[in-house]
Image (tube, rainbow, N blue to C red; front, side, top):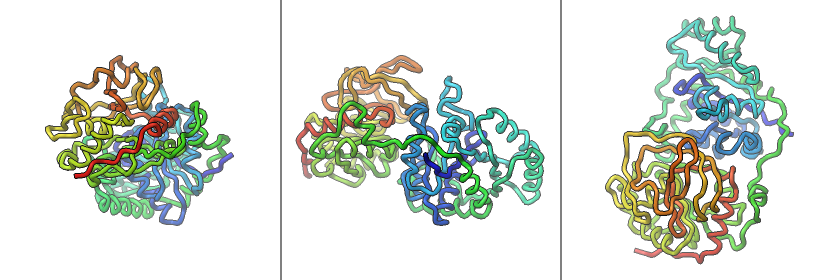
Length: 463
């Protein structure tokens, strides 16, 4: 049984300021001396980067679509181990989930699975007494969701706050905070959401400090902490990467093969559990920055290039010719190379006309069209990441187009919501737009580690 105090920070819709409020709460409680565990509902990679900055611990995702509802509590308990408080930021509106699946993957479902009280962040900028009707509707929609309080955001004046508080007092919903409009707490956005922390480290630090100060001034932290402590015990056991690997059908590999993992400002999308699973499978994870490092880590036997924003750094990535040659040499040796989304673009011949690695006979460019959504897929052949027939759930999240989108041997056969093939498999390379959470299928990490162990260490060429 676990008694971790916890809160879910939700909202009626996107754009109300819940990320600002949630991050500010995380930072304020951390500055007060608490060890805070940060979690994000859904597949988003960017918000957890701000959460990590606020708490000094990895930001974790809780996605009931990608990993299944039964994994939400174990992954939460794993991520919050040793913490005094857990703060879970919701996704979209409180009751919005995977399209066509009812409540699946919604903030409401995660709150119920965690038996956690919900605090609703309401943009009050264009309403007064109507706020009570809005909150009443959200509080009464699902009796299984415990909506325990409201934080009013973008309040215009003292008089405005008085009207809002009076209306909510009539509705019987506690107001746990009232925040004025504050431009200094805003975080810049781009075509796929907030600008990641790694791209604006100094400015991000200032933003998080401002968010913490705003929350301290405008929220009742004592009442919020008491509410978090009112959450009941959770009966489950924490997810364990070593046990997950063992249950996937085989134990860890021997010899600690080196798996290089791309990081830095261009490749910021990664779930913390991936590195933990690789380590549990017996690999040594070596992070490198393709914008700065001219060689792959010494002894590299496999390579993982995750998601991010390579289009923002296409010229710089292209200019690092020594590293591109190292990647080409590794791929040519038959070593496992797994690329997701941004990694797929990096392995292509070109990105917006800038030469990339050229491992794949494909070219990438920015597009006006956003491709976004959950997917179901099956591996069409044995490859570096998955055995043929392996079924996964993933998500796509990009404004780029790759031509051709699928190679002679595609990586995945998409089965939902539309049937199509996608991605490229050649030799040891598995490259695709699809983001997959390996905690849902630990065999992926085990297969990659085993493939790395079977390859000789490759020294990257110089010059």
